[in-house]
Amino acid sequence: MTATWSDSFHATDPFILHGFFDSNLVRLFTTYDAGDATWGWQVELDFRDPEACTLRMFNVIPGLGPVPAVSLQGVR
Image 1: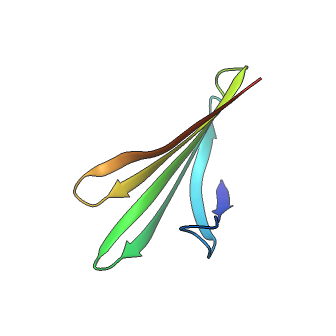
Image 2: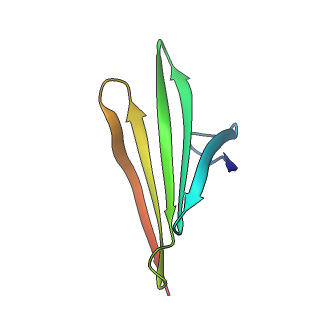
Image 3: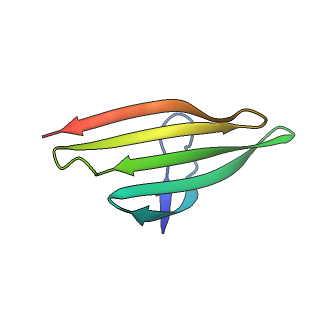
């Protein structure tokens, strides 16, 4: 699975994420250069609850790993 992400703040130039769909959960991953280090993003779209959709984003920091950055939940 591939997806394109852009936003008006950090990602004005769209970037490509790669991932998979499993058990109503989409998991996407990408990396980006930040100075001398390679950082990353992990994005999850969680459809496991039939009454909600949750978007979670993690900034992957070198030497630290995934750090929660965004959590949005839409409910019916």
